[in-house]
Every structure is written in structure tokens, then in C-alpha cells.
Image (cartoon, rainbow, N blue to C red; front, side):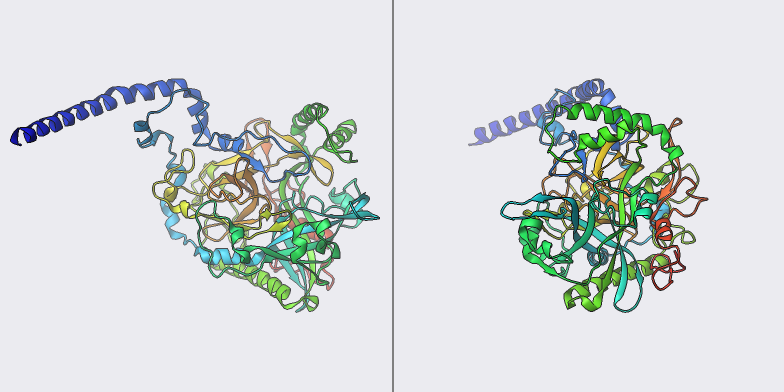
Length: 602
């Protein structure tokens, strides 16, 4: 027995020595050699990655402006972690996967400067509840100029229900206790059929005409059957529709919304109401910059349009009057000016609460109260990137501008957390309440994003993680708004993490962790599954506070909500507030010019 024990000890000691030698060999020879090979092989790849995260995430993202019935943008997705890396053929043995990835982490982009300690983050439950009350699912009812024949119906149908989108209360004007003008914001592609709702002369002046002569004449507003008591975090890929209280019910101003053949399965949970007027477009996010500054981009977008037209010749398009190829061809033949667009729009809805049932009345009153609460909090709190003398309701310096400014100012370039809540579409026309930040968001070991630290330390908005097409000569033709040819897109889009709400959530309001509204949700990863909140996403910021230039071309500063300050936005011609003045030069029906955002008058 003694001899056996001695032999075991000797073998154990020898094994320990061998392991030590192997470990030394790995760390002194193999690992350095491996990383030398990798760095040599991928030098250009790494250089490109480090220069700007946005150049990579751009490939992964897909703008939600894709019309599922017609053209779909083809976007190259970034390789999934489970796939082999196409940029190098070397495969790491398991030991390398366990090593800290110091070379790939961008820690500074995921940290606040010391001065940020003076700002207080708002309780997430307060922010989610406020977002919930301000937010609705939406479908628009369109009266078509040219009807279509539906199966089983004797007459042509001229009613079209749009696909699901998400809207939120931006502003309101109170006429009396029952009558309000509600101003809802969303993506422009969600409001892509809201043309021809203004007086003809006014529509022409604002360049909001739709050659199809289709007109938005009705609306259907939805909200979850029951408001959540608490906005709990769920595991990623949690199916929000399994909770029946999250599924939306609707109130619609047109009987057609209650017909499943015409508006999908949401018809089964839709109630007709007389409380709404027809929707009216106030602001569409295109052609809002002096054209002198868009002219340098015309050759680029027209050349891209010609290439697109050539490609479409090999494709089968539906037999319609306004196919993509016909829209592009008509514009090029007429040598029309092609405006650039950003994915934001505002429309008006008049509401008479005297004609609403108790549930609908409660929805509207809570939306108004939530906006009032938001405005009160932002007036009182010490907030980053916001000069209260300029605006009490939103930041005055955006993250892109803050990251580029050389001035010695205390501006934040990122946000640890963001909050998004919306209504993705499910099951052929239904919508379901969903919100971001799954449980994995605070995981201390999981690393879900390239070049980011572990999730718990990753910022939802990292410094310099944004997209832009203008300065990189990457504008694309876009034909899904008002049957017009536009350039995709003006300005910049900001990437966000832990927030990939699926199609139908497009148009949702985005808050940072200090409770400031910073943009409208507009992009979802091409490769993402419906409930994969960890996929990449993006939002359209409300402003670019200073001009940005690469030396040859310039993106002029703008503010989509209020661009009326010509000292700050001298190149801007249209915004929500500027259009309100144009549409209501003498004030509203009672002569009053006040709204919640502009208490001193528009």
C-alpha cells in the first residue's frame, strides 16, 4: 500500500510539472505566435473595426421601412457568434476562447466621465409607465383613388388598412375639457400613406403631395388589454404575446377596421368609435433643409437610382401604377430634384372625449397626463446635454455632435441605459406590447456585442456608435413614402443595444436613462428573431446640433421638433413647429396658439 501511494504521488507531481511546462509553452510561445498571425492576417480588418463601430453595425441593420408586400432591401448581416469568422481561416482552440478579449473591447466608449455623477438616472419603472401611457399601436385607413377587387365581394374595395406601427403623444392643444388636438409622432415610413390630408395648396407648398391621389381618411388606435402592474425584465427571446394582457385592442373611426378581410386579425378586437377625426399630416421628415445644401448629393443619388432601375429590369414587379421602377423612372425622366429623408413624422388627430367610452377616454387622459409629467420632470431636473434656456423638453446637444465637438464643454456622448416600448406586429394584423432590456442586459459574464465589455458594463448607446450615409457616398433611392423618389437618408442614425423590438414597434419613442426623449426607434437587425432583444437596433435622433463636414460635403444642423431658431439652424426650412405656424397662421380654431411644448405659442 505504501509503495502504491508513493507511486501515485510521484505521478501526480510529474503531471503537475508537465502541466506547468505546457502552460508556460502556451503563454510564452503559442499564444504570442497566434496573435501575431491574427494581427498580420487581419490588420486591415481590425483597423476598420476600431475606426468606428458604426461601419460594422451598418451591415447588420435593416431599416424598418421595408414594405413586406413589395421591395425588400438586401442588407448584409454581421457574422453571428455561432458562425465561423469569414475574415480569417484560423480557428481558436478552446483555451483561447477563455482568454480575456482585451484587444477587442472599447471600454472608453462604455464609460461616463466623472462630471456625469451630478446627473440622476430616473427609476426605470417610472420611465416605462410614462412611455406606456404615451404610446399606442396604430393603423391608418386609406381611401384609394383606384379600387381593388377583393375575393368574395361584388364591388371594388377602395379601403386599405396599413400595417401595424407605433405612435406616441408628442404634443397637444386643449380646446376645452373634451376637445383636444393631439399631435402624434412616429416614423415617416409608418406614416407613408398620410399624404393628401392637407389643403391642396398647402400640400403643394410643403411638397407633401402624393401623385397616386390616395388619401388617409381614418385611423385605428390600439393599446394592451391591460396595463402592466410592473414592467419586469424577461429572459431574452421571451414571447410577450404569451401574456394575453399584452395583446392590443383597438378603437377605429371606420367600420372597415372591424372587417378581418380588410384589416387583418386585429378586426376581432376592434371597436368602432366616433371620437376621432381623420388624421392630418403636420410634418414629414424630408425636404426640410435648404436645397442648396442638398444639391451636392444629387449626382450620387441619381446615379444610384439609375443602377437600381437597371437591376429592377430583371425583377418581376406587381402590375400597379406606382411600382418602384415606375416611380424611379418617372423622376429621372423629369430630372426632378430628389429630397433626402429622415424617418420621422408628426400628424394631428382631433379627439372629442364626449364621444369616447370610458376605456378610450382613460387612454387619452393618461397619455396627456404622462406628457405633462414628462415636461414637469424635465423642467425641474438637472439634465445632461440640455440648455433649458433653449429647450425645457428635450436635449439641445445630440450624442453625435457631442462626440465631435472640440470645445471644453461637459457633454455626454453616450448613455448607459435606454428605454423603448412599442407594439410589434404578430399573427396577421395583431399587435402586442413589448419593451426592451431583457434579463441578460445586466449579466456580468455574458458579452453580447462586438468590442463591448460584459453586458452589465456595456452602454446601450456607446460613444461614436452611429450610422451615416451622406458623407460616405452611400445614399440609396427610396420609394415607399407618398409614391415619391427620396434619398435614404439625411443625417445620422444612432445604434442601440438590448433593444431590438421587432417590426411594428417602428416609431416608438426612445428615452435615455435620465428620462430625456432622444429619438424615434427606426431600425431592427436583419437577422434577428422576433423576440431577440439582444440583436442590434437603431433610432433616428431628433436633432444634429452642429454642422458636420468631411471637407467636401456637409450635413447641416437641424432640429426636427423645432428648427425655427435661424441662428442655430440657418439651413433648415421645415420642422414640426415651423409647419404648425404654416398650417395655423392665425392660431387654432379658438385663436389660441398654445400647445404643451410651446406654452408661449407656436
